[in-house]
Image (cartoon, rainbow, N blue to C red; front, side, top):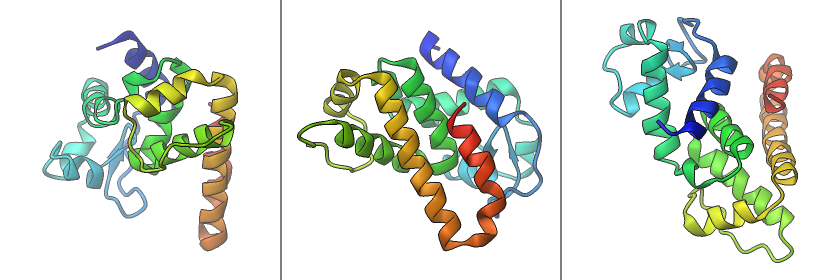
Length: 171
């Protein structure tokens, strides 16, 4: 696997940890941040019991195939941006994360031109790679924070999760 992915996955797996969670917010059991519902949707597992036995290597393969490659995160030159996109994809889903990224690019561009379609292609990557990575990372974090705060406003029972979500944005 490419070095940039190896660095990004190390951060993600550190954030997620390898603890088994028997029930993860209605998505079945999870481990390494991989819920049964998501793994089953991709055809990665067939039963909830398989989640308990997921190894770090299997989790790495899962994220490489179904997140990194599928979302073309290798097109992003800056490792910090690519890592944050991978990390956010686990919590928010790849399409939503790419939408946040596109919104951030448009916010930093004098003449916003990117369709916020949730797809990272060569044109989008070129726009991402042309921006100052620190400014883009901050704009990406702001989009995600706004999203998390909207979740809590719509469903106050999510309030206990907010501090953890916001802390993770800074990792």
